[in-house]
Amino acid sequence: MLDRPGTSAGTFRTVGDRPDAQELLNAMAATVSDQIVPATTGGAQHAARVVANLCRILAREAASGGGAPSVDELRELLGDDANGPGGVASSDEVLVALDARLAHGDPEFARAALPVLRRDVERRLAIAKPSYLHEDASATEPETT
Amino acid sequence: MTGSAGSSSTTESALADLLRSAGWAQPAVTITGAASVGAQRSTLFIEITGADQTTAAVAQLSSGIVASTPATTEAALISLAAEAAVPVPRVLAVTDSLPDSGQPAQVLSREPGLSIPRRLLRSVAELGTGEALARDCGAALAGLHGLDADAAPAGLERLDPIDPFGAYCDGLTDRLDQLPHPHPAVRLGVEWLRRNPPSPPPRLCMVHADFRTGNLLVDDGRLSAVLDWELAHVGDPMEDLAYLCLRTWRFGNDDLPVGGFGSIDALRSAYEQSGGTWRDDAFRWWMAARSAWWACGLAAQAAAFSAGLSDSIVLAASGRRVPELEYDLLNLIDPATEEHPDGL
Image (cartoon, rainbow over all chains, first blue to last red; front, side, top):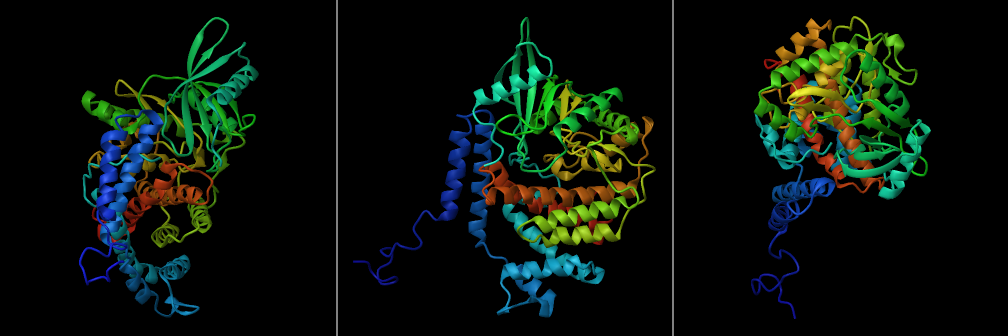
């Protein structure tokens, strides 16, 4: 029989098993980089490099909690336009509404949106490729074009 | 799934048939390796064995996922570029649709040199030829841009000569609208581009449109061939010069704005000495425009994966590169960064 959470530390294991997602993804990246990449060539080697890089991205995403704190800023920016059909819009609905407002080409709104969007881009870039946020990034990620 | 050539033997057989139709006598094709890691196109090293000799060549097979210039039109343009002294491979055979797979395909001469970006950049750095290579690029682009646009192959797309920048923005808007998810940072950039067109070009000309590290073959540190003409069209010549300088094509060598190997002064001076006209405002505009374009391209590649059109992990990974291009785009249009005109 399972113990209730908190009644016997470490015995309720359906949530929060270790290693956690971040640890596992980093371990997967290291395994692929250190063992699979040297053992392959050509397209398979490139694919392995891409997989290792994706594991590192996902590890950073797991560490970040995957949240999008800028959505609240975007809601504020949009005002009434941020309201979805059922009340407060979801993150996706906020992005759709923002995209539609920007498509109108209103320069004043664009000026107000720019710093908010910049913060959102920087948040996502910190997950996808943090070195890109710095000058002279000595990128090590594989080319994916 | 799209983009599969089927088994190697099927591809070899299809390429042999293609060469036979181009006049080769009893060719046999053997695939000896994969040259490229491209997401839109696979490039194979092949050997063509005929009656009395073996020829090393390259076969390019498009994925068909991203629309591009027909292979036959591309081949015609490559031949035109050769006449303007642009270093290019020779076209040995071409079709817009291989039997069975339906893929556009070209067989090209195998020229010497490196194209894989990091290897190429390492080699150029070791040889100390970065500035000379940037000058090679400037001269090659001036040669291409000096061709008479009226001589362009009939199938080549043409930017609207009356409002080329508005037309380009319309194209970007279409690309954005076709994506399954909104990309407001790119949308903001496209609307900025629409409101801030640069000076018009003296005339429209043939542009390569994918002239960048990765599509340049470099031998002994110097330009030996310009590859991958599938995006070529008639447009503003500054598009090519700007695209070569996007940060994304510097592969980490951010202090060398021309493809990660050279300076803008070297590129510009060679371009102008070879008859080209440089426009600073258009250079910046096209850097922003092509950043937006490539952001859409990466998002479209990821969408093709998500839609089940491809199982390529490279295409899937493209989606996580979109913020790089958004970041570059915002840096280019944000007044707060204007004190750094090359500020990527």
